[in-house]
Amino acid sequence: MKPLAFLTLFLLLLPPVAKAEIWFSAGTPLAFSSSGSGRGVYNYETAASFHPSGMMLHASVLPWFPAVGISQAAIDIVPQGLAFGDETANRLSWDMVDLLFDLSGEGVNFLLGYGWGFADFACQAADCQGWSVEPKESNQYTALLGVPYGHFDFHVTLQRVFAKVRLGPQGDMHNQQFEGVLSGVGVKIGF
Image (tube, rainbow, N blue to C red; front, top):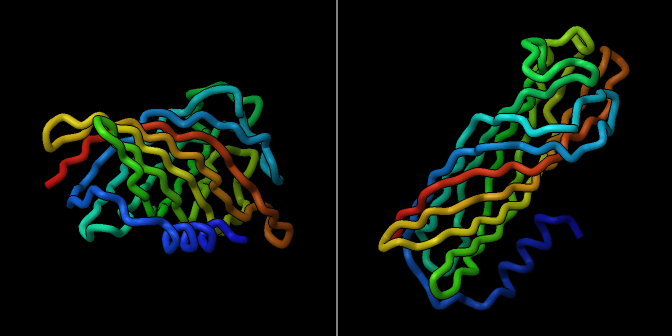
């Protein structure tokens, strides 16, 4: 069963939660720890964390339904053998649409979610210049843990990302998967 089909089935069978409120959330990523093994045609460094840029926006405006939102991030991918901080690093970016399920309890907010979207890879280093790149369907799993403070919530977010592209020399393209954990912080306001 595909993850999205499982998520839809889970949603349909999930009993309504007692808490129904409208809320909006915004966050920013802080770190991306690569956990991939260089699967595919492109070998990249997996020994350290990368500083990402991007944002996460989520909202719950219909009581009893999952929250929806978007998350975007971009990180520099360092080819194996180059020093970190080298200006010839390549850039991986992705855009995801998220569904979040509110499993909050007393005194703590907890959300689990699934994201679907596409990743892109911009090559600047000599090891893949001239290669073609095609965005490919990607996904992520999200956990958000927050501490309520009045109408606000300060939270941390962890996203297990599976970003995929097709890349390679023209006529010899292969699938490439970049895996890792994206961590971030944010604030939520509820009404």
